[in-house]
Figure 1 (cartoon, rainbow, N blue to C red):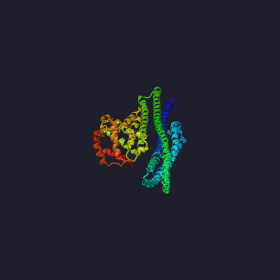
Figure 2: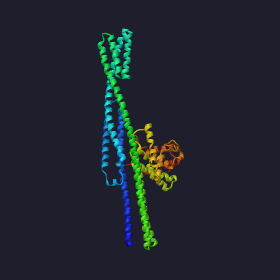
Figure 3: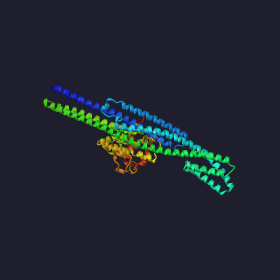
Figure 4: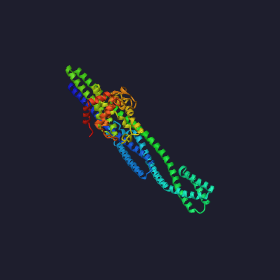
Length: 527
């Protein structure tokens, strides 16, 4: 083969390799997008089941028939959404495309499918249990109303009997009446069983036989006693059944919590596996390309008397191609990191522009603080991951429209450690920086932050910068639990928190370059 044909063939292979790299990159990006849709579907099905669990708890506490029906309607609504989402996931499982033979979809993973099947079976158990709880609670509310309606009548009739007895001045009859009052409490408010009712009824009949001429009053009293005692006994039976059902449901809910956690862990593993496979594939292709170019250079230099300048030109072209491919991989990794950060924000119903603004603010703070351009740019790329741990926080807490109670706040605060655990194992500098940001962006300069209560410069500069950038944007943005603050209120807070929440130097930078921060906010404002 002539040298000319050899060169043509060699450069044809190089072009093929470049095209292959871009094709594989496109495949991975498509797969990441598809897996994000799967994660969203699985997250929604877990959310719907958690809402159904919550409604079961609510229905056991309500004492109002209208509220009972309202809870039932909501349960049916979430049950329908659960079934629709389940069918959607099953359709995705059956709809395999060509790429699935190379990279496993999340929704087709055997472990996740097994966990989802457990959720589906438990959902059926929850539906049946809800129906039973609903019927029992409806009956209980009706019985309580009937009891409350009839009980004053029992007291009224008992008072009439007591008046008759007091006029008799008979100690034995008075004692007998005292037993009636005792057994009425035993039957209606303590034991609530047939045995207590039989004793109560026996005392009433004994008293009736001891007093002549009041059969009509005693018959009315006996009839009323039978009514309200029947109500009380049945209420006690319902409460006992309720207790068993609650324990049964608690067992299912605990099992679902474990399944949810397993699903989350498997999704994380599959995501990192896909990213590692992408990095390895790209690296191998690049190495192969570099080796091929080096061999080509050697053969051309050996067999043809090319000048040094010509050889250098060819090598330079090859190196430029490699640099371009490396740049493409770097940009792809940055997009993946940014997308993962945006997922955490969107689960809490915040816009993608929030992470863009925080990224730009962080870079500006870093440059004025004294970090070099490269490190500041890396912080800009890492800061969008500050709230990635929110993907593991239940939507019922994440999107609550009011203040959190202590338990909810404790769960919400775990997002920093969850985010750190997701990222800390990576050996890549960008993800290492993101792990620090996720872990320390809620620490405060005066040591009152969380999770570790770090103080002053114990907090990494990345955490200190992201903290002030995140707070500035969060205060100026509307959230589900608050409206946006006006600028004057934000500026006053920053002045008050100088040396408390924020490092004084960072607050000074903010006010010295305020026009630049406001320009970023306007440039990336929410539509």
